[in-house]
Image 1 (tube, rainbow, N blue to C red):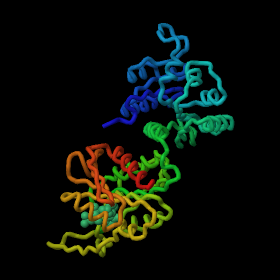
Image 2: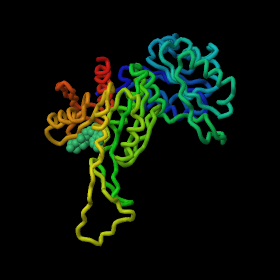
Image 3: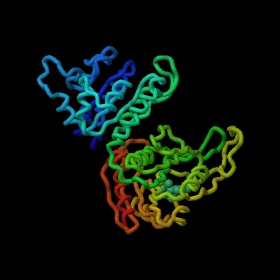
Image 4: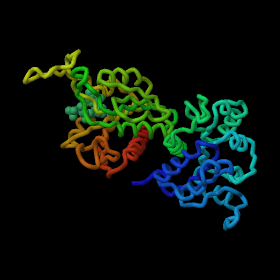
Length: 400
Ligand code: CTP
């Protein structure tokens, strides 16, 4: 399985104050994605975090001064700029933002930045009054217009005691935005609706009928579609995953709620990807109070839920409709039947209950089946990779 940043060199520029220790986590997450990370630090930040921390973790010398003694490379600022696949400035202070916006190169970091030609991601992080300062905002606008990607700072209590915008974002957000920034935008202008996770059908206020779907597959599809520039709406059942960034997320519980949300949002959508594991039945009359165990036997009457996908298939015109089929046997036969009966363009079928495939895990072994009777079997892949491949196939279907 390929890591996202395998073979890539990312230069992490660390300036700022107290929040700089959080950049250590950014470095670690970048390495987890396979990147080689090189660190440049300003003089000021070294009062808060020592270069040795970054040096030990990155396995690379840390660049702190243009005139370092014992430095074999006299052109390090040029070499590193040439070799960088992307640059992250985190935290980015008012000072470095001001310098970059105005072409000032007076230390190792700003001189290096002047030579950079690869994508630059900036994470402004400072006191909220400094962040709101008109000169800082003006400089951020200039850098955005110059093609830098600006990661919005978090809002909340700041180290100085003030409250407001200016917090260093969660490290995973910085890495997620870098991956999105580096992904070619081949779905710009396309609207995609994704459903994910299980549904819950209440029996009484404390019990329900559901399934073990974690939502990972659908959330991966939504994230990857957003990376590729699509306008994404994600309708999910109850799961413990965070909302993907820059995606309109709606949380639902029952199939009835999911059905309403889907039909409220399906208008003008180019692609519907229904990865949710929907309950086929609901309890006819859920009890208003907790059911007591005073009887030896109990019969629950279930009524059928609407097959949301089948209803979409009946009204679809140019829309691409993709279903999922989790099966325990006769995978191809069952999945082909669902394509026909629900009028789908393709279905993603998988056998559930295996160690490397199915509910709750990060990998999946799936087979793509198409309306024309063809199908392709894929090896075990990360759900994000399956999502990317699915989007490739959808793009192909849309081009027809
Ligand atoms: N689906 C749906 N509404 C339902 C049931 C299923 O929209 N009430 C969608 C799922 O989101 C999935 C596809 O239909 O994309 C196939 O779901 P699956 O549960 O595998 O199949 P079913 O049609 O429910 O058939 P069966 O349970 O008999 O296998």
